Length: 178
Image (cartoon, rainbow, N blue to C red; front, side, top):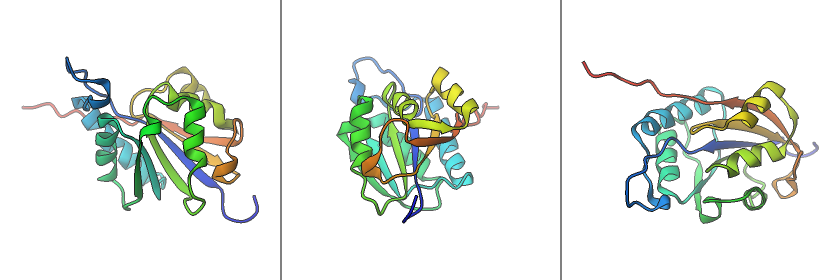
């Protein structure tokens, strides 16, 4: 790619959420496991150098809580946009959201929901780490992190244009009371 370096898209599925009776889906909070796993996802991003300069986060409570716990582990304070279009989004809608990213942003973290996040990653990946791609295709659990390198401007993002470089499912350590 000529011009600026390739862009990086990090896709994070929100951490494990609770299902309290009578609480609308949009307002579901994180479960205990989610509160443990989200910081682990943040540490993973920090340790692998995948620190975003822009975060696009669904407006759902569980994604916002995930972001708060991830952010506490990072060495930067990226710009954050809470985007209603990410909640319950299809692949086409998510691609539209990412295409709207201003070119000044080179590393973007998208925090969203199943099945949209998995479908987005699988749709965009044209080549890359076949083993990681296979694991992401089989299952994209809560707190899963996928990293895609994009050789084109955000506005030109299309299926099959990204390189799938990384996939992990970070888990926090459960502390057992004595």
